[in-house]
Length: 411
Ligand code: SAH
Image (cartoon, rainbow, N blue to C red; front, top):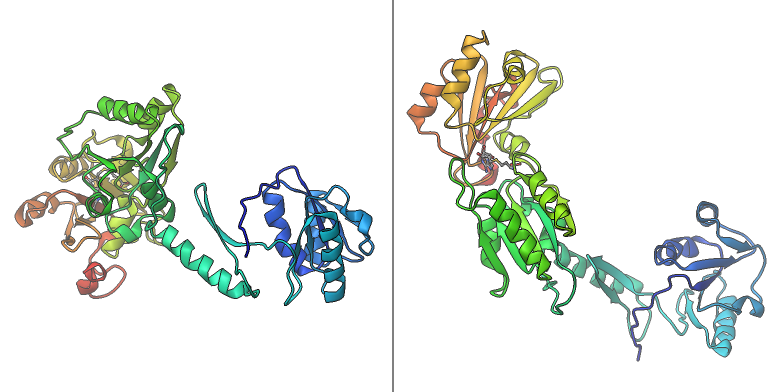
């Protein structure tokens, strides 16, 4: 039988016997845990030497002696010579020092686990009988995949831990465009405060019933829950010791008022962090086959909130052939923006693409020009959410001759 212990090596003396590649492979793990590592080996492989130098480790350039065990909490032996490793393990046994024997086919009193972590949860795998590191590693990898998929119940059960807020970018919609970190934080959350856009609906439906879901459903022009109240909600739940995920469409810092939520948490003394997401400013044009920059065509891109006033900077971007202008929340404002551009002398034939419901089955792209955009948007009944792209990259078939493929990948 083997008992798996979660041992902290921080500040503890660890003796590594042997200076080869196995030592080099395991060393970082001990160092990451804060162990004080000493090495005894007549010679060092280049990779071991690099680590010894980088971390200023103590290296005794000779063969192992029993006296080397003095003070060690753990010994790791990987000399490449089975007899030496067995002798080290036997000496450690007599001294009651736990020993990992890395020799093929042998093992000492301790074994290193194949391990994977997700947040503060660590899962280790060892085999109880024969040594089979490849199997342990593949079991570990399978568990890591479950972690990454958000499929494991990572929520804390013990209350009393301090609460926190994570602003999580949810990307443009499909759950598989969430980041691995976003999935993990959602799996750990006690409370999820979500917008209507993004992957919210699908994900929230899958959560266990005891996770509190709060829909603050923002849409252009209607903000059912005012920003101050959202800030207060986040703070109140975190103060009550909850792990709060503020799930936002796209990226939290792109017209998402994420900065204000961070400031509110900081002012309230609540630990807060931000997970970036794939912004619709880039990913919705991409879903329609539009690269926001393209060597030789678009050297920069300018992202604006269509609801705001049309600034000189936006007019300059619209007028510049080498710049792509990306307008979010611009459906209602499109006639006003197009008119401002016309009055400022921007060419009426600047290509425009309006991409609705990017990355969803109802994605639709309307290609037009600045001069005709307002009329055409009305004619085809463009609706929110949509991203409006102005510039040469927005021309129909810019990347591929036939635009027929556009959107198919999401269907
Ligand atoms: N933080 C978000 C943007 C919030 S503003 C991000 O980084 O993506 C909301 C605007 O984003 C919408 O009005 C629309 O212009 C755009 N948007 C978000 N998701 C979209 C989608 N799937 N399709 C088209 N536009 C989208």
